[in-house]
Length: 117
Image (tube, rainbow, N blue to C red; front, side):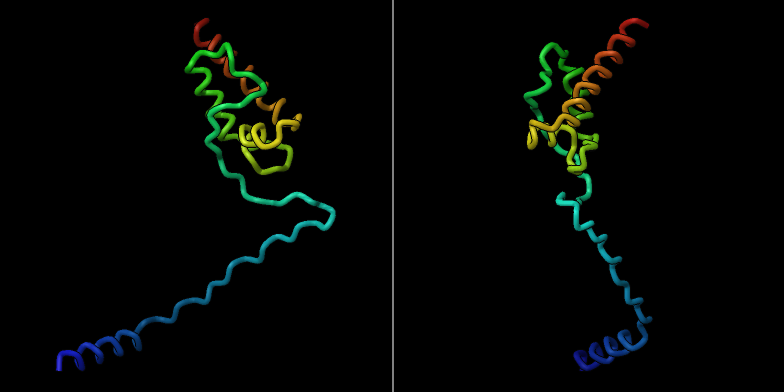
């Protein structure tokens, strides 16, 4: 008797349930045929060491700040990797090297400005 009652209640709940919309995902962007690069969404990385440019001469706090920014900022060469990941995976990339050098210089300048105040 209990099983029949539960089955009837389940059928009633299913019958009274509102219709759910039929959501469909948006179509994926098509890549231009002349573009050999894989398009992907930017994801931060967790690289802890890069070879070039060298992080030698930075204080531990400066090094942490530089690594944080290198891992969180996207490389603008089109690889959709972080600057740090691009430095590790593509050591010949001039764009990521220039960005890394710029970040190191900015962190050094920030530290000097804090000390100068």
